[in-house]
Length: 179
Image: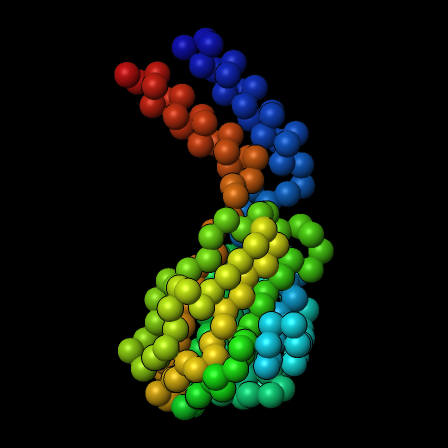
């Protein structure tokens, strides 16, 4: 038991040293994200916004210059498109949004997928999504949205922060100790 207490203290101190002032959880909360509407191809930026992720909708319909038919909410581990009208995304090589780490402070992204969407959405699959360590994007070219009240929510997964890894390790050690 004495060794477990010493290990717990050591892991906790290590987590504080490794984590520093970083978030204890890996997510977008409080981070600055650059949102770019790319059209008619991935290399062409039609619109761009730097937003700080917090409570509420980061890009309401009245802020999106070229299309007031939807708003974009970025949460801890998701990007959500909420539609208020019929929308047909022009079928070009790329017609969609890219969300990138503006300041280089967001943990590494390791996955991006469709979490959920309403029934009035047609034409979007996981194959239309992409990511790298610092950004996620979705190509909505050819996607049709039936009308208001429809939504698409995309899930983002991050590499856990050092403090989170330390807590996971501590939980594993406690489980082993019980055995």
